[in-house]
Length: 125
Image 1 (cartoon, rainbow, N blue to C red):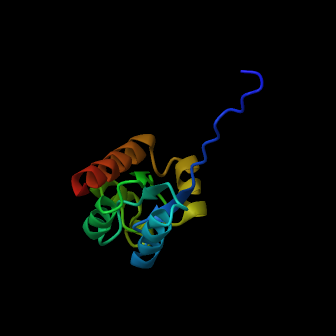
Image 2: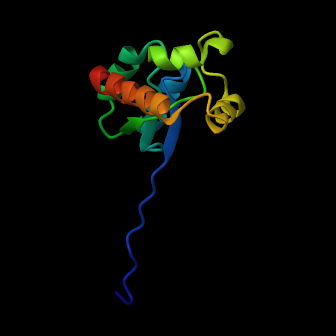
């Protein structure tokens, strides 16, 4: 349409909702101020249910699942077994990538873990 500007939409995503309570509180506050419009929820952290309840009080904030292989404790037994050399925790970004590339962590392990993370977020609301 010549002469008519197209509407501009901006999504401001605040990552790592649920990582720490202070991070989650900051994201909700920024959303209430109209700054943040979306967030990604980390499913494998303590306090997910409380974090999800806070999201329910902020309906304008779009929330998705932050699929995670780098921090915290895996949700599936298969992935915890794969992470045994890191005391059953995800090993961090570089080691996780290395483990996937080397075949120590298989695609089926990742798929199962991510499915569990999605299901936990859905169950939390």
